[in-house]
Length: 178
Image (cartoon, rainbow, N blue to C red):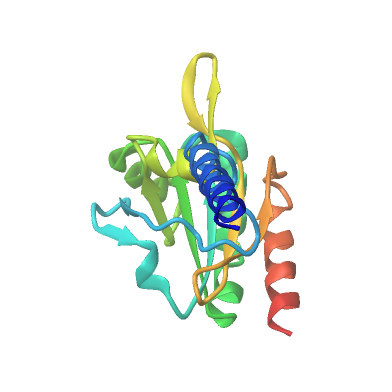
């Protein structure tokens, strides 16, 4: 009787260990999971923590590079829709591997007022399964996570189209709030 219990316990422990290893290797967090916690510097140099937004919806979007065509279109669309997000109790956090100074320039040049977070160490992009590369240079893949006010992931988008993505996220957020 004790042997089957020990085998079941060992199997469960092995499964749990393998899941942790897989997640650490950069697999995307999935809907229903608690969003991985982080603290990163924004374009102002202030440290921004995910936990400080408990009670709000969070649009956490990863993008490849500041001041590139697709990333600028995506950021402009989030900025254009910012008042609608705020009316739905949502904040927008953009994350790339670019530096704080690069984010500061991007925000100044393009009139961006939401937080852009610098993950120069690639820790958060990896935890969210969003570390990519382009011509042997590390970048963030264009993925978005919608996080509910309790800190759980409720929707995931991968390889998004920057031209229509803000509208997609806004529509999903409105539907979830109904």
